[in-house]
Length: 177
Image (tube, rainbow, N blue to C red; front, side, top):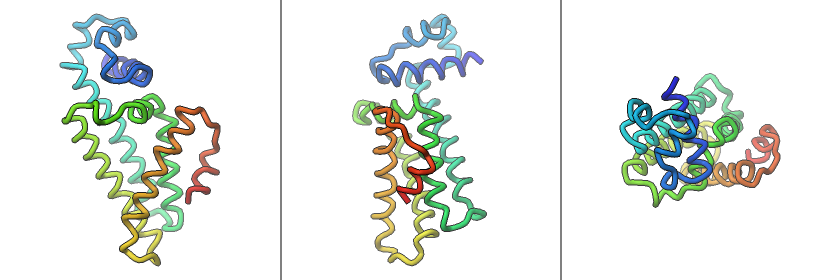
């Protein structure tokens, strides 16, 4: 329970102030716990950040994997992919805001590598969607299509998370497909 509380409050603070600007002291004050209680759950702020990334990204990738599984109709794959990604932005708005606001150049190398691993998994899932849904398109264009799909996601995320643009997920997914 305490670990979950720390993670939830840390996401709020990181989304508001950024990872670097948020201190363990601020996190413990927001949680109403001592620093000792924090360090019983996490060895450091960096460990907390790594666990946050793992927790959220594993959930998002599992949801994506299920939404584009072999049981899904090929013509709905890209819609499903977008829907899960945009829904994740809404469900995990604080977490998403962190990475929309926080330049990766300011985050340490280990976290950057961790994010690259998840980005690779997202790209592989997206590539499988393109292969199945766009069989009629020359394979040489698949990387370009993946690039376009993946590029739209943070742009739209910025619109409805940071700019508070109201949007229907269904309409957005249909339009982007």
